[in-house]
Length: 107
Image (cartoon, rainbow, N blue to C red; front, side, top):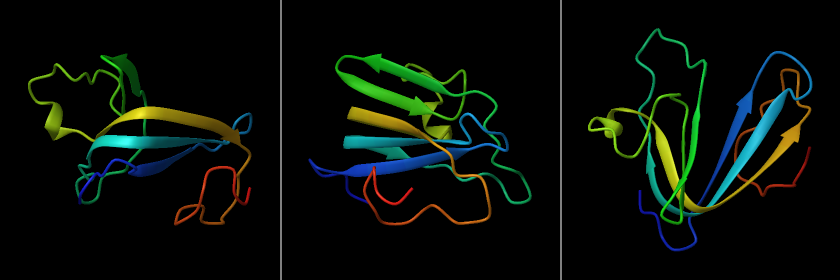
């Protein structure tokens, strides 16, 4: 994967309750996306997340104690970008919400 000047990543974080039932994160001008899948037979529940702004970059990780200074940072999933937009969405139910599209699209 190559992260060009206009690379974008959309992340949907859902939960089983309302207000909000989901938050959509839309990263623009992605610098790096480090994806580490959950091991087989493990869930992907996010119990805490990290959101940091440092030296003009925005960092997000589904690991609560993650930081860019961690010596083992690449063992975890994280995103670094120049811009982040987010929104709350009420998307409870069985419909799949991932795939191509723009933020602010069908909701």
